[in-house]
Image 1 (tube, rainbow, N blue to C red):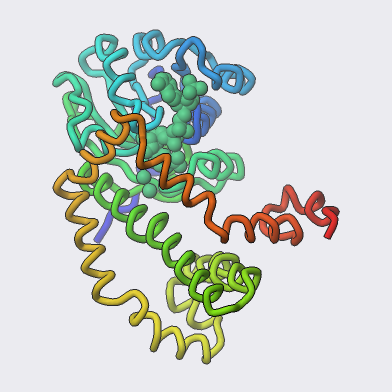
Image 2 (image 1 turned 120 degrees about the horizontal axis):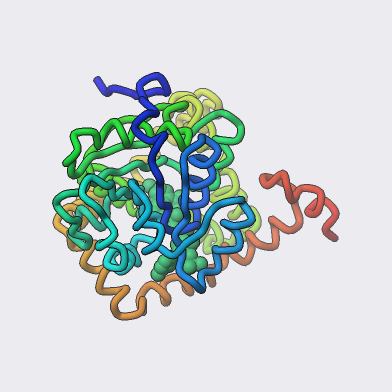
Length: 340
Ligand code: NDP
Ligand code: MG
Ligand code: MG
């Protein structure tokens, strides 16, 4: 069985007298930096001179330096710039890593696919909250915590795992629970999940469902509600209580229809495609494609993004979300007042 680590399993002496450099102040960076700072850890944020994030970090009361300066004074360097720029940022800071320092990541891509080759005398760890950064911050403030993963790729001090757990404690992850994995497993499951199910699979399912209804003459508004908006309610039920919790809450008609038709829509052909997608992750085909795409200035990526933005469902959804008040509580008042 899997060991889940909680607050009591973390020994804060492994981080309390250390300086942590947070490189990048985006989604994960701002959350790690503020949570560690409020946990009493010495934090320095590393950002380039002309960085648009400098003001935000300063306004949040944090010390800001360049990535090189921050890495120079830090014992733990947490690399939280986008995955595609990490190799270049690493080249800038590699000479600042002293023996026994820790190079830390929140995703294993660059280590696993050899885009970053760390010096042999540093620890290399991963502390990855399983959540977008703004929730890592919000959950810390509310006292809830965010579940997370830790992994050790290189352990020169013999304390890499203990230190990763202490860091996970500092950002609030051990409140919710942390499990140990490897860089390989984290990287491959993360890529497969976002491609086949979470981001890729689900958007394709939504678009195909929407197009099927609209092409058959139903109104785009109905198709939008049915195939996109209601998805959240279904996912919430699965999140709370598994597939069974969802089946329990929908009508018997929905349950029978779903159980008889679902596997016809996402069938053994889709399963074969999933296996192909997984193989491309495992054998490095996807990594190579993404690295080359970036080197070429992202031509396919830009084209695909544009096509996605121009899909009818975005237009219909944008208009409907303006007219109805739902979801984002912060915007509710404004939306309720919008002219119908
Ligand atoms: P972001 O895209 O939010 O990072 C943006 C930050 O990086 C900004 O502060 C930006 O500052 C800085 N930055 C961008 N380019 C450079 C550069 N060339 N040199 C120096 N700084 C730069 O990153 P994420 O938080 O999304 O991702 C960070 C890591 O966390 C990744 O490894 C990702 O896979 C992982 N992760 C992300 C999750 C998420 O929810 N987003 C979830 C779990 C893991 P500037 O103003 O200078 O551009
Ligand atoms: Mg993920
Ligand atoms: Mg990912």
